[in-house]
Length: 300
Ligand SMILES: Nc1nc2c(ncn2[C@@H]2O[C@H](COP(=O)(O)OP(=O)(O)OP(=O)(O)O)[C@@H](O)[C@H]2O)c(=O)[nH]1
Ligand SMILES: [Mg+2]
Image 1 (cartoon, rainbow, N blue to C red):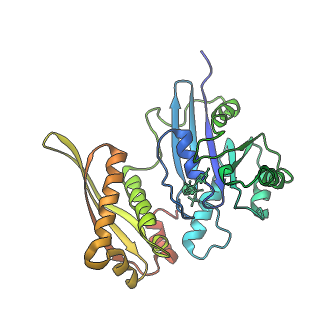
Image 2 (cartoon, helix red, strand yellow):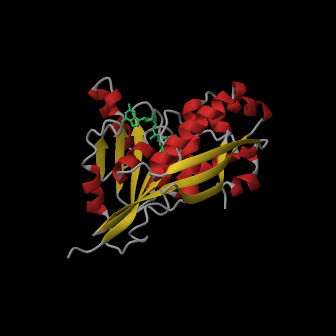
Image 3 (cartoon, protein in one colour):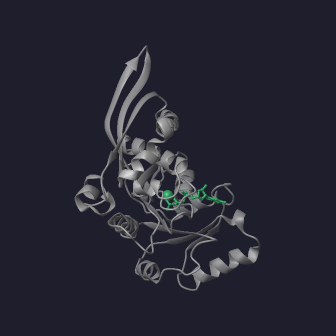
C-alpha cells in the first residue's frame, strides 16, 4: 500500500484574483463564498480533501490589502500572512489585472520559506493576447523561484486539471491532520453567516457589503412533517444608523429579498429545509472595535 500523504496547501494573493474560486474547484465543493467584489473572504478557511491515501488541507485566505483602513483590514491581512507560516505548499495567485506592482513585503516573506511554491496566473480568459500572460509570469519569476507555474482560468476550469497532480507530487508523507470525515475547520454557523454575507455582497451596492457583519444567534435542527429542517436566527450588524434603512429597504423589500436569497443558498448548502429570520442591528464603527472584532472571530 502507498504511504499516506497529508499537508497544508495555502493559497495567498491580492483581493479578487480568484483564490476562493480555485479553492472550491480543487475541493470539489463550495466552501468559500465568491463574489465579483474584492475583499469577499474575511477569514482564513480550511477546506479538507480526503481520499484513502491522502488528505489535503486547503487554506483559503482574505486577499492582502495594501492600504488597510480599519482594524478589520489589519486582522484580514494577519489571516493572509499567517498562511505563510504553516504551508507545506504555497500557491501564490495573481490575475492579469492585479499586481502591476508586486508587493515587496510579500516577496520578502515568501523568499524566507523553504516549501514548494506554485504560481497560478488566473483569469487568462480575459487576456487580450499571450504576451500579457508572459509578461505577468516574467514579473514574478524574476523575483521568486517557483516549482510549478500554471496559467489558468479558474472560472472556466481551463488548464486547472494539472494542479492537483502537482500538489500530490509535493505533498509530504504524513498521517492525516484531521478526522477523515471532516471537511472544514469552520462551524455550521460560520457557513450560514458566510452565505448571508455573500448575498449581501450581491444585493447591495457601494459601502454596505463592507460595513456589515453577520452573526448566527440560533441554529436549531428539527424534523417537520418527516422533513429535515433548520431554524436559523441571524443578526446583521451595520456600522452606521443610516445603513440600517438601506439594508431594510422600502417597506422591507430589500431585507425580504435578502432573506429569500440567503435561505435558498443555505438550503442548497445543507440539503435541508430552512426557516430563516434576520434582524438588523446597529453597532457603531464595529470595524475598529477590538473587543467586537474579537467576538466576531477576527482577533485572538
Ligand atoms: N474572468 C474570470 N473571472 C474569474 C476567474 N476566476 C474567478 N473569477 C471571478 O473573479 C471574482 C473574484 O473571485 P473570488 O474567487 O471571490 O476571488 P478571491 O481572490 O477569493 O477574492 P477575495 O476573497 O475578495 O480576496 C468572481 O467574480 C469570480 O467569478 C477566471 O478565471 N476568469
Ligand atoms: Mg475569497
